[in-house]
Image (cartoon, rainbow, N blue to C red; front, top):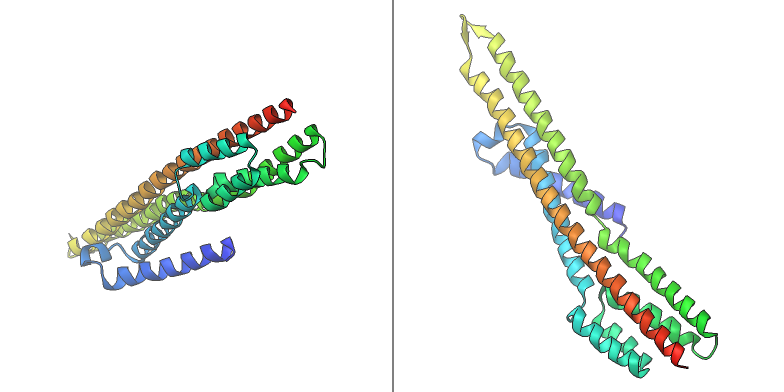
Length: 242
């Protein structure tokens, strides 16, 4: 499924769920926040969907076994010249780091005996960089959506606050027999506060989730770069021994 279609589906379904919850499940004091509360609930549902998607994707990107143990086995096989075993280990491990290393090792093995040492190493490095360029966008997918939702939620909450305050001030100007309609005034203030709370809640969750996943992606990138560097250094040392 294309990313744009996925986001559009999540948006439509989340907003539908948000307005259903607002119309049928919320207590009266929260429903008084108006339809904007339904939009804020929809944004919270979107955040939950993206958080689940990112958690599952990054768990899959980690691979089946520990990255450290996988890399130790990989180094041992490469040191022995067992390139088929190293590729098989990558296929078994899967995950981002394994995919990147597999691309480099496979290219090195293909060129072995068919190109100069310098050519093999440069092509191996290129294969690793190309694989890395394909893997990184998968790790960073939907992070922009998380930060965007956090920003939009604040704005929507502020919009609801403004509308509520407008209604509250309007109630003070509409006097019946010189007396302010306390019900209308309370409704306007309640609408403002409910929307403020909803916007802040969605923004806080979005910012925390965004920073958490950004740190996770940075850790993945560091691991990939370190593993790629170690593999390249090992292959260079083996080429120098020839």
